[in-house]
Length: 124
Image 1 (cartoon, rainbow, N blue to C red):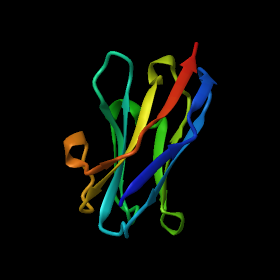
Image 2: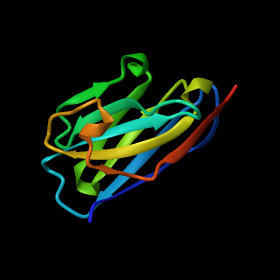
Image 3: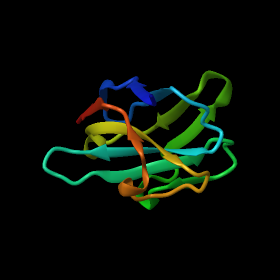
Image 4: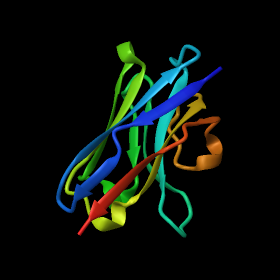
């Protein structure tokens, strides 16, 4: 059974940084791609970033390029999202997701498994 467990969320001031982690377990993920999505109150879920399990392919939401970085540690089965220069509009629940197939995708419905999310709150 696939499990994705996010951690690292919290309260941070605008301009600060956070690193989210997603620990994946339950199967071999070498043929998977991983993604981060977020959902703010009253808004639809949106794509943040994605990475192939090998780490050689990444994709980012255009609005987040340059501030957010996705990475992966295959030995630890963990995906990271480094978030810098955070803004109040980055406040959301951040979800980790996994999809079969190494092609990175930006649409939530392409993903097969989801974590429960971690709250990120950025104060002004």
